[in-house]
Image (cartoon, rainbow over all chains, first blue to last red; front, side, top):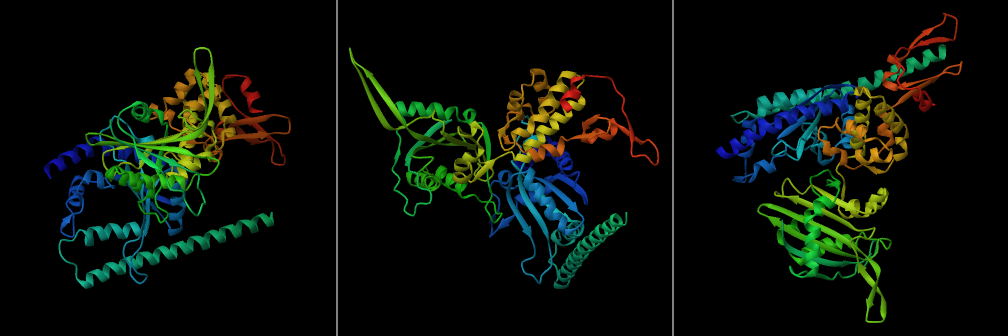
Length: 212
Length: 340
């Protein structure tokens, strides 16, 4: 594991860090005219998180036999938007400007469950941000598109639920699901409100024009 | 990179055929004239193939591409049977227009690095002339396969990891070199289930931003003028495969203008990156706003800078007329002609 730590630390410092900054600027330039984007964040996966993930097991066997080539979110980006309908607008732009090798709309397993929601992509790193002089440039990065409420819930859930060192009780799991349901509900209402208000604004401007 | 295995298959045009013809295949010995010729092609593969391509994801969004999967299986097994699966895949998308072809699959490696090179030589007619002491014997040959034929196609993938590599490769399709992207559908989109690595919007945006940045930053009038003229003609490129470098050649940009354009790029090699030009994307970044006024004047400026260039003031409260003012040094009087 020591070698992997050294190797990833080197990539983290010399490649992922500067690449992450260039990618953020590139994304911000592309999305600067799209309304209701709260923020765009990029980050290299921290050394500890990478090593934790690399050590993960599945069926009593190491999940990653070649972590440096198999872990695809060494570089991550997130676009946070206001309302659920904005997610598809941003996704369309992503498909225009990037080459995806995977996309997933992540929702809980059943319609009566609440938990993590988000749109995830694995994208080829655009040539515009690559400096060939940098060592071991990963071919991909992960991009997540989330609403403000999805983002807030997933951050808190990551802190309290995902990282927890103890087994969560049934009541705690239910509370986490409840907060996800509330976040989902808020998203639905804000989405409806946005549509209703936009339609009122449009109607109002038509009436104004007719009066003139 | 040392060649380990070469397979060859005769691929018939059988798109939409219910019964696919049996594909004859053979492993080529790693000695002799044919091997020597293929070795040369293989060693120059990455330089010859000048279009960067990338495999497409599966339709359900998952990280899977059946062609990539078949190529990886072939690289792992190195069997004629696995090669035949790839040949069958090509046969099933080959139309009569593309015709009979001879497929070569060359596998090579160097320590951990591996390369697969897949090339389709189209069938053609050839004439053999044999000169004896006083006679000349001329004969027509059918089913001659030539690399320099206009529809020669190839693709090369290099990598060390089957997990992270072999998603992007380099292709050549002599038919697209003639700017007809639609024909490439057969080799790149249908057979490989891939697309250009640089999307039309991504490449066009890069070009437009470079033009805009160079016009804004350059103090050289000729550079600005050349780029303004080229930008106005650029919409004629819609749907064509171009690179920043051949954009410059097509519109006769001087060497200094091409250099200035390339200097805006993160990596100067990006000027050779090929992509499909889109008029819609170009116009999003480079737009000219023109206002014609009743006295015959036509005011033109880059859309984003029009209000900076011209100030507009109503002549009086009741008048429909405006006074436009602008200030600056005259850099070239011909610019006004270009604007019209």
